[in-house]
Image 1 (spheres, protein in one colour):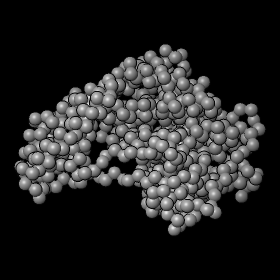
Image 2: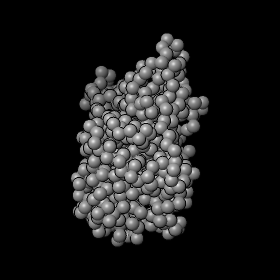
Image 3: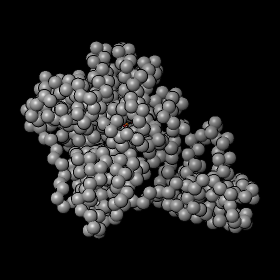
Length: 540
Ligand code: PEP
Ligand code: MG
């Protein structure tokens, strides 16, 4: 451990409500695959390198297949065959004879091989081939694609950014997380907030941290302190509860049975967002009807009492679905994804309906990233033709936020996804923000838009919830109630604190807090002014 520096402060953006102190575990960045290049070696040498690598990848796929079951096993076995397919390897040899390196030749051969599949029935296999291509290229370049995280002890992870494959490995050994990249609403932040793991993201200065240095992750102070001696975690604001029930219902965002159980213990009033794509992020092929029903049933049975709001599959660059058709461009989310994958969504609705009948739970369903009332009508018609669920739309694009009044009679509810809405409103990539502060939910223009949606929804006779990360901030939840939002859905670990703050104030106080936030010039002023008002009754 380094003792050369103490109380060094690194700034980032805090996520969560508790702090943690533990030694740093620095996770090496996965190096990008090298670009295609011509080789300095002879074709004979490159051909031998390719053969050795293909044999190695084949063996490792067979080994993982042997440890797997069901469809996963079948897919892995098939890939172990394909990697050594005569046509594929012959095509790679042709590229090698043209002077390309073994890795480049294999990458090019796979691209040629899959090109006819993109329009054919086998399109869903495209990503498997892409993965195979990467495995062989990484092996030839000496790059490890998978990263191993600690499973014992207690550590603060320091990492460039976390993928779903990384967060799937999280155990109790992860006491805190510091990411160099990312933003307050990126995948890593959502997972940390759900699990109650304190995190500071977008902390580029953490590149200086070395293994074993003690770190204080002070997410309320949006800072990491290296080798803390004098500096302590920032104080959180705790409000005194006065009401017997929260001003508005507090539901939970879930993506696993574990989340559902945490939400039940926290007395959430149901589920406000089930991120269904989290359930299938590992699947190489579309899960069967039976497999989907089993997953939804397990989730429904562990969910807290109250409605369960299910979101149909949402695909994005930080949450890819290997088995769905998508080039992962932002414009392929929402309506485009829906029409391109209509059969997939219909089968999802059928499985949800079957699970609902088995459990008797009250299920509502909503679609992500729709952009106009016509798109919402298309989705609502689709759902009503197959189920008797209440239907809703997420408000994640400014274009729909401004047309909520036209949704009267089309949907039963809307749910504001502030993570994507901020991204759209300010033109900032939530996974790699250049100005992360623009994604701060205290931005007065975001607050204003939420207020507009809530008012329009009330006039249209539609329920209006907020399920983005903004709803996990206990102080901001009071502002949301004041804006006329009818429920919030928070990260499971945040539900107790959000409930408490919504039990601390009468509606008139919440309304005043919302007015104060709206009147401020920027996000830090809004947060400070609302806190001063709620804690001290001060109007600045
Ligand atoms: C959002 O965008 O606010 C939201 C809740 O959806 P997700 O974070 O899953 O994109
Ligand atoms: Mg979203």
